[in-house]
Image (cartoon, rainbow, N blue to C red; front, side):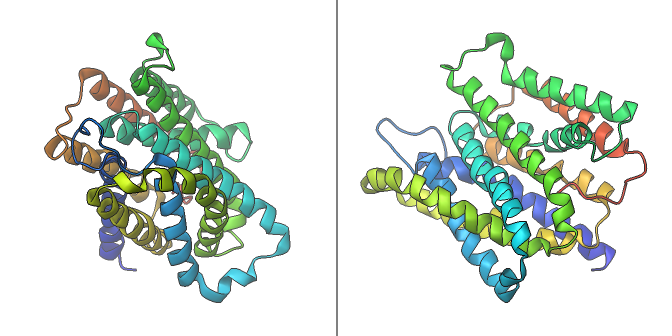
Length: 307
């Protein structure tokens, strides 16, 4: 891809990913704003199951016969990636999003590069540097500030939701670090397809029960949002992302990831009526500063991609 097409692709990918918090809440609430009394949309686990199933079908078709080319020795790794990158990732994020605000979820997702760097250093996959260690500390401080740990109480839905989204970021980050060696010998599209196929095998049974219970009261808005979630910030975004990352530099990817909370924040503010608090803004600045430090403080490995 040419440089201009890479930039357009990264812009499109991060914009699509940025719509997930908004449409995720619409799917679970059945409405754009706060749900009315007695209103019920799709349960979080059902959204996770439908997203995984839709992605498995689309990515599986895109991979085609290449799915058979996976060595048996790598199937165990693919199962682990499915656990961390699909099952835990989807369930934790959507359960968290159901409890917190779209803006909080969007800001906390950006801790992924911070957690990725932390796990890479802990597992000795990358070398430490002062900027990277400082970035981890600053980024985690921002996440913990937004999580309101000084008011720690799991009965508080928003605090519990924030912690679930943080756990989702950590789970995805650990998968990224562990997957790097495998991605060097297997097509990333094949890895993603297998991850969602295996993830769907676990999530569909878990999400089917809640889905059938809620079925009679699920409004049309939930299903419309679900179609968007599967088609745009899942299948289309992943396929375009894989193509763009073949020609993108890591610094480009790092810069464009900041679009996710921007897009999510604009949708939450302009459409859903959410308003960011001073704590949210300060937390976002700390997290963004931490991400910048870990992304641009890498000693000699600038060719690696974070996504």
